[in-house]
Image 1: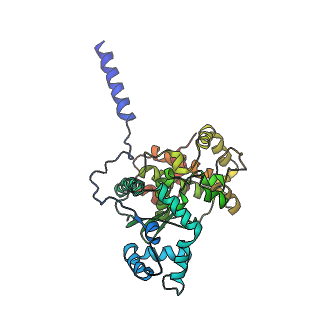
Image 2: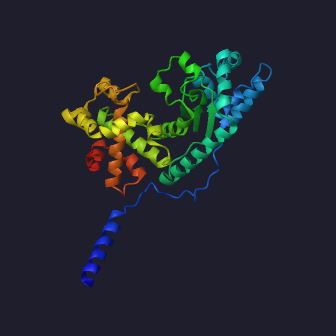
Image 3: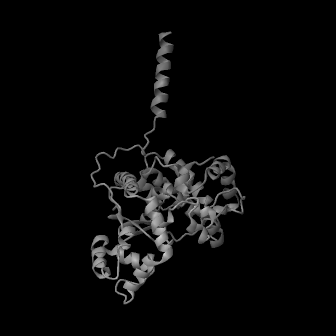
Amino acid sequence: MNYILKLSFIILTVHFLTGCKHNQMDIDTSSVSMEPIIFKRLDKDVFTLTPENVTQKTSEFQKKYTTFYTRYITSIVNNGGINDSLYSQSILRFISDKEMNAAYIDINKIYSDNDVELIGDEMTEAVKRFKVFFPKRKTPKQFVTFMSGFNYNVVYSDSTLGIGLDMYLGKNNAFYSMLQFPKFKTHSMNKEHIVSDAVRGWVISEFDNAEPTNNLLNHLIFYGKIFYVTDALIPNVNDSLKIGYTSAQMKYCKTFEKNLWGFFAKDNKLYENDIKLVTEYTNDGPFTGSISKECPPRIIMWLGWQIVKSYMEHNDKVTLEELMNEKDPQKILAKSKYKP
């Protein structure tokens, strides 16, 4: 009897030890030393410009925002450059425009300084986690909110991570209707999606997909890695926010995961490099028509996400840095042992 009890204890112990794999997502950031992230409010600053102070303020903005202010003027609001002879007229015309003023009022209604501070708190934790997972990589030097004229959600340039708050005014905002933004786009243009969009945009910029092979498999694994790193940086954010799907779309993916994988696995679809085909499964839209009207857009990204999760589960000694440095998508697919 004692032998049987002892044997049972040994078996249970072995099961316990082999069943408890280290979860590398479970990290402690308390030892990471960094100042809390505070977003600079370029959206507010630019609306303080007047014909009388534009020269002085421009000089101040160049010091405060460094080269990003030039980038903002040149590329985001498309008003030429700071050294352009029409710079003052252009930027003053931008902020005095009736619609831009109305949009700015909406921004201030929705985003108090406290709201922006809370976004900074979430980004602080995300950057801390990045520093743990990628200790040799650089992180953004400054964080900025701006008014984009309804052109940009997230910008990562000149070591600056910028968020266009006018692109997050809520799906029912009158400007979005006036601009005829489609519903599949506006459903995620709200406060809840800011952090996930910002983190994902930063990660995509950090790990640019510059591989010469432009087939579906390359995109599948690249975006799978992007979403896996996004998981690592903001683990408490709902998956639907990370990928911009509705709850119904997430349910569809889970319900038909096996069918979706079968669709792409057969007939060597993953090795297709026809640009129209690649675009069909990676671009945004209301749905993926060649599969069904219920199938979400960018479906190859969601599927790649599941494959990379499986890869990391089956290769738990692979670090995130090693994952992102692995340039062979076929190797990741094979070692993922993905079987939905």
